[in-house]
Image (tube, rainbow, N blue to C red; front, side, top):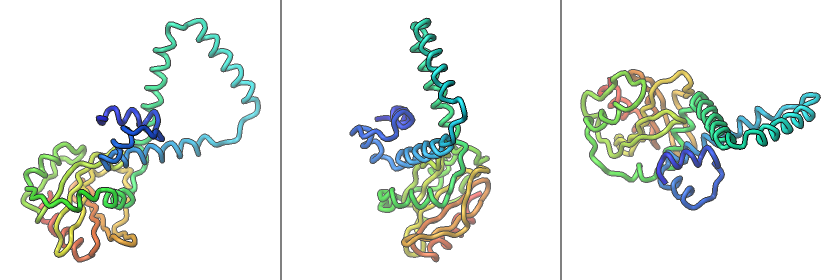
Amino acid sequence: MDDLEFRRKVFSDPNSQEPDFLQAINDNAGRKDTLNSVKALNDRISDALNVDTPDGMAERLILRQQLKQHHIHKRKTGFTLAMAASVAFVAGIAFTLLRNAPVDLTEHAIAHVYHEDVAMSADQDIGFSDLNKQLVSLVSMKGAHFTQQPGEVHYSSYCDFQGVRSLHMVMQGQDGKVTVFIVPEEKRMQFEKSFSDKKYQGMTFKKDGAYMVLVGEDKADLNYVKKELEGTFI
């Protein structure tokens, strides 16, 4: 299942249990994040719609249904096109709401680290020129790039922070590995300068139009990688 087909399936039936849909989620952690974001959006919409029924609503709905049936009967030839337009409109509204919803960088960063074991086990040797090629495709980065090699980079790929295309890296700290997310700066971003759970510690700081979100098991490794980034990223 390619990305386009996956997104269509996510918006039409996010709770689908079809084998190819489930396999597509397992093959790509970014897809799992997209699915979770859509489900969260559906929950918010459901909560927003859970209001008291106004007086006379039942009668109005019955009348509306009768008018709709009459319209269908009179214009059968236009029904398919109208339905397609309605579905596209609803999908567009859903995508817009998702794109404009607040993004908790801390929550997304921790979730990415836990669900992308392949990144932490990677042992590549990625040069800063390759990182700069990936940075070019990130929106709102205003030409930000690495001026030299930021230490050892074992892994780099794109990831999705609720519709925001970002760069996911794994760098070498003093002892352990540190996951680094370079997320283009947007007003809807929410973050904490330092955070932690039972396993990981993290920090977030701004650098030249981007949020740098670092996650690792040791604070010394985080500080080490932070210095590498501050000295090489402009």
